[in-house]
Structures are given as structure tokens and as C-alpha cells.
Length: 142
Image (tube, rainbow, N blue to C red; front, side):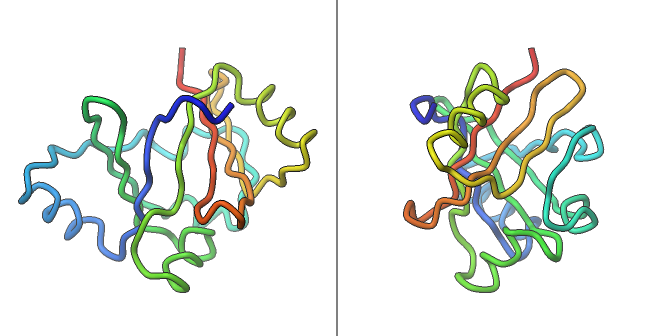
């Protein structure tokens, strides 16, 4: 399931300042991430923190880059407090998030947080301390 890279997510203190910096070096324009309220199923450490997290993204030729300004109580906020700004997770595209998550659980991977939209698209973040970053699977809307 970890063979089709979709995006790299960078956690930042100030998403507006980070976006301006990237644009100053020719990486832009940045787009609004779909509303987090679209998730109808969520298992996250802090719902209010998740909903207050801000994302912006850009599609480049071979993948997507995401900027994330985390809300309080989120794994991203913990990362920012402990490590400072930087790459939080690598996102991999899968055809079926539920089946891939079940396979990963069967292999002993623990889920850090997950969410699904009504169309079946969504994400699962795995607790992957040995990877140096969080590994995520995601299913795009059809």
C-alpha cells in the first residue's frame, strides 16, 4: 500500500507566512483544502483541535505538497512542539482506504487517527515511530 506517493505534509507555525515564503521562491499558488467538516466519520485525538487545523496545498508535476498549521491537541501540534516545523507525514494513495487499513492492522500497524467522507474517500494515519515520519494512506474521491 505504500507504493504510490500522493503528498508530503509540512507542519508550520504560521501557514500564511509559510505560503508567502514558498510563493516567493516560485512554489504556488496554494489552494484551500476541502472543508474538514466534510468528514462524516472521525477517530481523532481531539475533535476541536482537528477541526481548527488549517491546510493549504499545491499540486506539482509529480505529487502534492501540503502545509499544515495544527490545532491544539493534535498529533501535528505535538510534533511541532517537540521537533519544530518540518515534514510530519508522507501520504500514499490507495484504491480502498478501508481494505488497506484492515491489511495494515493485520500486519500489526496501529492507527493514529482516521477519517472518512460520505463518498468513501478519506485518510488513515499510522503510528510509525520507526519511520521518522508518520505514514498515511488516503483514498481520493471517485
